[in-house]
Image (cartoon, rainbow, N blue to C red):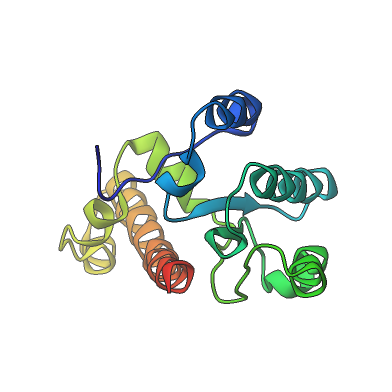
Length: 169
């Protein structure tokens, strides 16, 4: 048993997960929060709302269901207004305009390199200075690339921290 755990149930496995939960008494109470990522594509957010309804139908308390806007360009309230309207009007689930993740290519970069934000940001290399002082053109380009990736990663990591704090508040 874990006291702190995040369990990611992929969209393709949600039905199996829900069926399994419905077979156990009190299973809905086993989790502190149910976080449902929501993107702006209509089919995706409609599926997210179906998931909210399914969770409610097996006894999950509404305040435990967190809709979490993901892959946002600027403002989740403008990009997925239906989610905010649903929560406000239906009083089902929870959504916070400060709990969202921006779309960023940094995620793909980190996944491809198999590194985390801390590894990239906290490596203490001054890639900007290295790029300026390097005489080898290939190395200069690589240092400049690393500088750009590092600078891109900083606000995204900050967004992750802020989103998590708002999500669990």
